[in-house]
Image 1 (tube, helix red, strand yellow):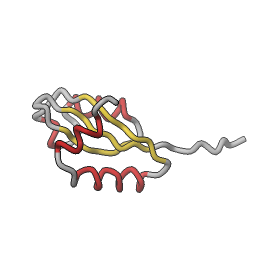
Image 2 (spheres, one colour):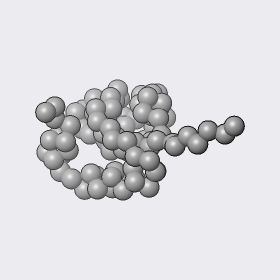
Image 3 (cartoon, rainbow, N blue to C red):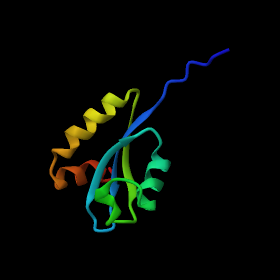
Image 4 (cartoon, helix red, strand yellow):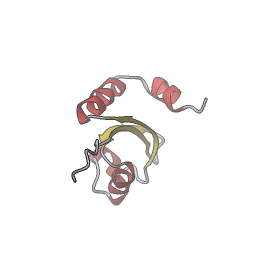
Length: 87
């Protein structure tokens, strides 16, 4: 019996050591944070370690997660900070 498992994808914001925010997408948040912190992640985060994922949103397709990333990358830092601010 084959289970029809729906794969989940995430858009995330990671806080870097210099207080900047990095936007990305992935299928596994913990694995992605570990990859950034090992120095094998994005070039931007390599010199800004450690990083911590501070916000994530779940999607049922990678294209939706990528669209959300593209949308938020155009936002100002102030607007991104508002998104992650606790309510």
